[in-house]
Length: 180
Image (cartoon, rainbow, N blue to C red):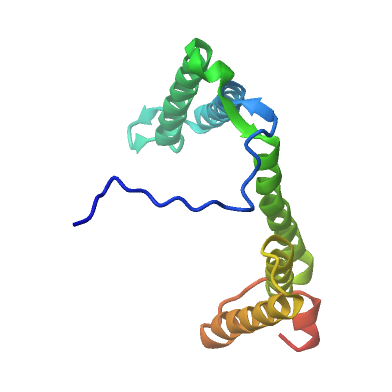
């Protein structure tokens, strides 16, 4: 007979510290995101109004549907702003701590660099570097395992996309040296 109320808890040795100082509150994040979405809604609304957001004799103009979507987005943004200012609970609620933000940045920064490197090195070289660096730095995997895994994955991607399916992928100087 099993008891569904029993919970197995496994401690994560790499989990962020519980006493890490807060970086920002949930209210600040809600307000900033609501303001950004409101700015986007206003920009989209203005642009779609400019291209035509009315109904003419042939039907809706090009900006008709997107204009009203931007009105809905603007209304939702205003609702989010009001809810953020009226909420007493969120004022003290921590959104992210310094240790949590450090863990997020450990993934975000290399991923951003991967996107930039893809423009100059091509998809396959950038993927090789991303996988090898992630496995080594974040996963603490042995260097030879990280390099081997990155190489096998990159070759598998190349064979799958470039050879088997003939999909055009961003190429870099290494692929050009091999004639691709």
